[in-house]
Length: 256
Image (cartoon, rainbow, N blue to C red):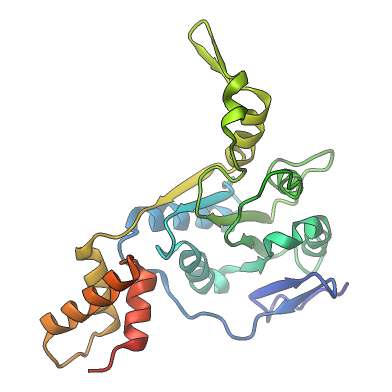
């Protein structure tokens, strides 16, 4: 495995087959101020990241909620905003979580320690009997060896509970006095998400926010703005979704 020159590389993707970090040469240029309708989530993640960059205690973050609502884009935007301040990002596919110890070792070297790394795992979730989540626990809470203090995990997911729940899992749940005691299976399901100190919820945009996002893609539009909005609504209704991602897709497909 070879390390990277992080002074000239702000992001990398883990390539499990070859066991190395591939530099990202074509970054998504999205900036935080371009992401509309998620002001509260943006503020919290920005503040957490700024604390991390200052060397102060900061939380691992789980961004969960509806598809196309800006979860992944927000993490990419943070990298663009803070790369000059020493922030770096390494994307790890869910299928490659077994390699997390090796990746952490690469980021715990003399050349990497001056930088602050976000381990980015997109669309994080696990199926029944999938044990890869145990590698995440080591990063989130440590084991015999604490994880390096220059690494945080930011993950996105469409569901808050990262491990699937079965109705039978609740059979052992009981109330003792006034306290709720979960069964072992439910405790295991909850314990992974609980290791993320910052939970940010993302909900579908309303029509007003959707049209504001559409307008942000057409700042110099000279035609009939109401007609543009009608076309954008029709486009969204055909997809049964009016998220920020839908607005972007409308922009790519619309011809005035």
